[in-house]
Image 1 (cartoon, rainbow, N blue to C red):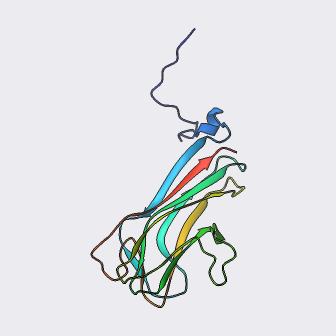
Image 2: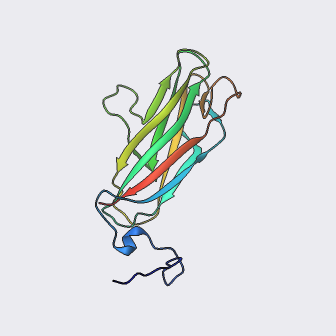
Image 3: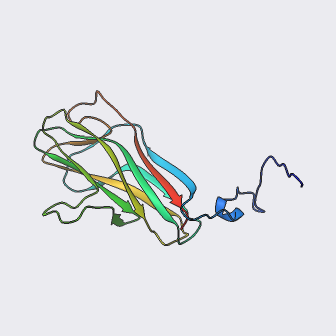
Length: 172
């Protein structure tokens, strides 16, 4: 039996091969992980959903791959009785929203009972983008009747938490 030892493997173009390039596409295995986000608090005071600077891009190695999208962080609202919501997008297509709500079908929301309320976000969705093109995932935030915040309290800048958007390619 022989042993081959190398320090690194590169493709002809100099890039590092993905697991799928090496024939390691085992269904259900994680092929790559990408993370984006922000470390600063951001506020928004409109019920029009807008980009808040949290995005990540991934290039699936196969069109049969699925992307596990995980959002973690905190959201808040500056006034009791008001709502802050988060929508998730693949490109310009909203994904991962709830269904059956009378007014709001969104990815995540908080309804503040106190002005200092802050809620941890840990939400995920398994997406099927059906592409091998670079694909960007992002979130948008809307605030209803007050100032909403991502990464801290809505009523104070005394707290800032990171917000992370993690993408995992799962072999299909």
